[in-house]
Length: 257
Image (cartoon, rainbow, N blue to C red; front, top):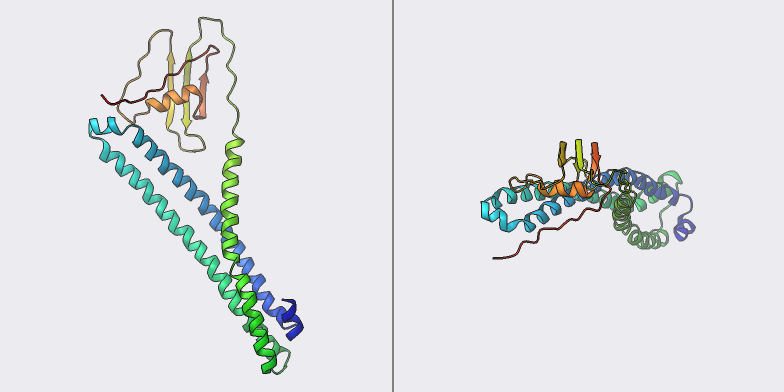
């Protein structure tokens, strides 16, 4: 940039102005890209969650013939993710196009200012060295789109980590008289960690002392209910009375007969 300024003088600042305008446009595009990149990560999380559930319960799903239903849900989530990927790719292409167009307009604007505004003759000893310097500068400018994309992805990733680390701690259990504790929910709603859509809505139930059976179809929410009782799900609303006594949880491990 300094060498170009020494060669053609102030007209090169007109070319620099095109670069600043392009970066301003890219800043607006980057904000839109950041929004859609967050949506893409959420769609990927949803897809991976459904795939994990499918793999974990594959044996039972095939036993009841429900694998096609779950497969259609996975493909629907995958298609949603692909649609958002297309949108983010378009925004990335716009950033690349803006930088490439600006780097190409840099010498055009500078030479226009040099000849039309400054009224100086564009001699060979000026034009060819300036074009060489413009080419060298263009190589650096074309690295900006990749840099912007990397920084945006890093910002989204760091933001997701910060959201996870800033989640509130589990509430401490209330004090009860020994032997009278019970788990109880009143109009409680729960969602998977980080999700906004509830997976359990308006649950009202209590577990009295003794044996309690929870049964239902595959995918009806039995595992989600257990995870809610353990505090592994985010409580969106309602009331959940926890026990102060030690609670043991034995996870199911499917084994082949």
